[in-house]
Image (cartoon, rainbow, N blue to C red; front, side, top):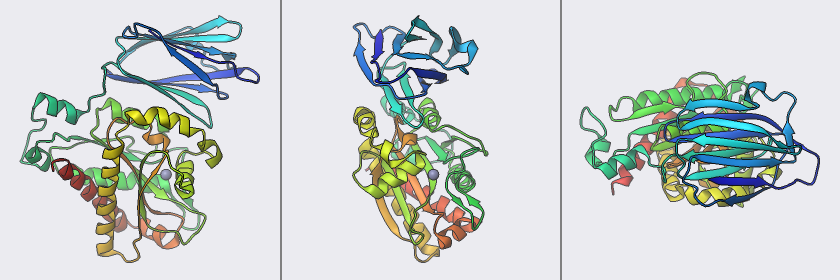
Length: 379
Ligand SMILES: [Zn+2]
């Protein structure tokens, strides 16, 4: 059993506003929405292999609009999460209990603006991607015609494409040309999906395939639950300096680069200042992230993008591979990259992004990078 106790904050009571969960057979992500941040003092009890995880939210009460049906017991029985029990432990404390079939590896971290506590709970001791499973069992994972992945015997099979933003979150907007990032990323994602689907050995998972809002914390959950082998998040860039242009690729890590922090702050929909809090989150979670593989994936995609665009377009700047703390990549258990394909804030690049032929060239560049990455794994 694992217990987490939350220390008293220095101000008034914090409201618990909601509990959300994404539960699958081997993996569950639970998100608590709170009105303010709480410092957590965590202790792990002996015998943590049982299926129960509980913790106390001290100096915390239910928000007035907290969904009533969730106040006592939520029967889930989806994936490996059986139920959530939640109630007043005493006047100042809410106790939350998760009952799982089995708890293996377990992570938790915080997101801010608004404050959220995220729990990633696996039923196995370690996360095993589809590719890893195939390698360990020495099984061919695909049928069909000879393919790159099969020739190399790698079993890289499931590719998760994440078109940035969507629904109520438009991302970057270019008012002059009436362009929204969410529409461009979706179109590029669909084009990349179409190209990758020409290879029978790949299974493509899109985190969204229409104009809908998907919370940042749900996107890595989709990738993990599907045991994705690669996760690629597609975005368009924006900078106050309108001459800024080019292609850049990011992997999850701590950075001191103010420009990288600015990009991450934009994508995380929060201020650069509150991003400073992420250092603690990252120190905790980076141990479990595939940093070097993600850097290689970024390098490969960056090269593919730049080379392919330069064939048809002039003034394509290679801004390189960078690191920054992106929420959307937090907790992803496979090599992951966030690609800023071009600047929507740059008039010339925005005009290009508006054209289907440029978006196709971007998708082809992403595709080349992904294929090169898969090939590089075999070397
Ligand atoms: Zn974006």
